[in-house]
Length: 153
Image (cartoon, rainbow, N blue to C red; front, side, top):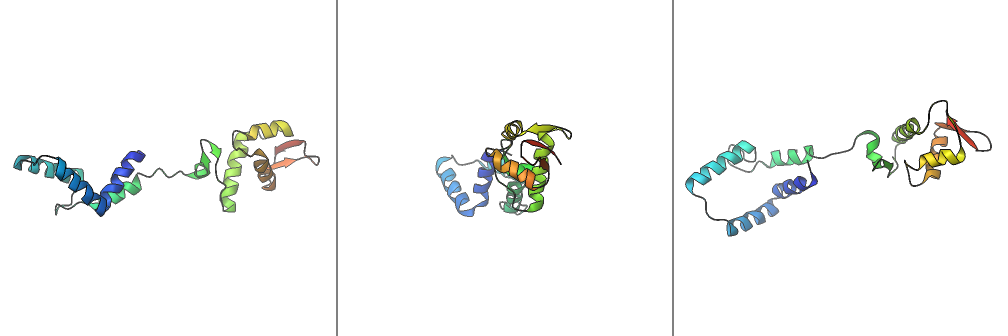
């Protein structure tokens, strides 16, 4: 569901905004004939907007609003445009994100010089130094003593 429809649903579930919308509609629309009223009521019932008691079904609208959320799952929760945007707070989530990076960063048997390793981190973050330290601290990447070569742990 697009963000535009979320806004429409949010207006419809808010009684104050809905009342204002109704006043605007009543002031600007022409009156309905009895046939138009009957057909419109039937269509509103069939759409699920009205209950059988001919009341606005706020519960259904709220459920649609919640169901329409595109909540990211997995590592996507911390990414924006494929790059790390925020760091997870929990250690398990942080390890999940860092593992995801390592799996895409280099082959299991690959050894990279520091410059190349850092260059490969740029697609994942704006701050490759912080990411590099996090990968080493999480024991997912091992560097030699002088810090010139990096490989997967």
